[in-house]
Length: 121
Image (cartoon, rainbow, N blue to C red; front, side, top):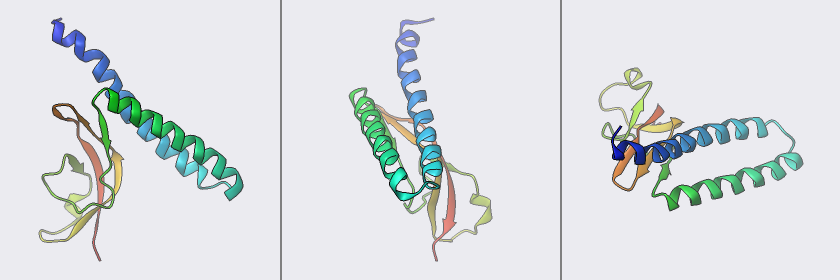
């Protein structure tokens, strides 16, 4: 194993933690949406705190999670659209849901995202 491979391991692990944390937060938010407003607020504050800490620590390592939800779809995006075959050429499409986030690093793209699209009405 080369020295470059050794130095990439912690960076790859951090990238993996970023993706899994993003997925976990999405799951928790889905569960929280089923709670009454009083209870939900307290837990949402904890999730927001966790996300701020995650983003801050990722930023210190030169990483950034990119959310594409609500952005007009472009085939050159750093994301794979799971349902692209459901649409015709020329359809005006927007990213409806992120399944996996895009992770950017100091030298560019580290992890391509996965998205679900919808047609703009």
